[in-house]
Length: 294
Image 1 (cartoon, rainbow, N blue to C red):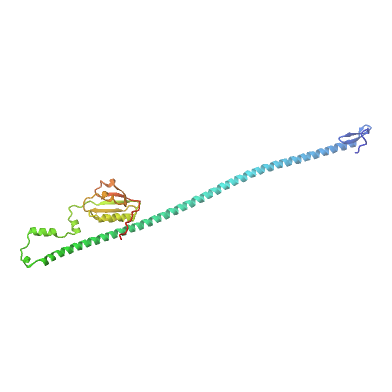
Image 2: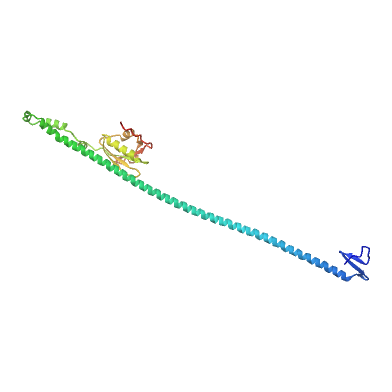
């Protein structure tokens, strides 16, 4: 509805509307139209407000659901990470146990193999030592028998005819001749008054075969020692020493560079049924080799 001017008293302006004046007041049609327009605007505002409210609620619900979904995803991720970590740790522990078991198995096999080879070597060296001793004793016996046989033959060859007519020698002469006859090492051992008790040298680990054989060789070279026997043992081999006379074996062996420490085993000292045991600790230092003589 257009305006007819600000000073025109034929209408009235209301809320931007120009309503004509009539005899009894305002134009009813225009008033109704204004009210309907206001109602329509109100309805549109209400509708927009409801739409905005719906959008706001939807946004709030979306944010809430997004937060909830994020928490669920986070919880699932943490749980999966824990499960994966536990699985990897279990696999690592199983692998470590497997490696440890295999390592122990290999170490045991190597230990058994080394112990077996060491025992065989000790046994072989002991057999060789016994063979050398047997050959030495056999040579001594042969030499003694040879001397026993050669002595009367030489005496008969040196006799003169006058000697053959002499009377038989007296008892004192026989005793003198018997005393001058050579006596073998075996006969000396058989004529000893009382046997001396054996001694046992227990070799403590760590072991060194060459040093052990040096000790055996040195003992065999001593005139006070009648016999030695090597007892193979993978952990603590022993040397049984049979002396010809009472000796202080600790003092004798203490000067050897192959030996670091000697100590008598007091636990078995009171047991007279067993050989006196001396525990031997080998020197960790290598023994210097003598230079060959030119």
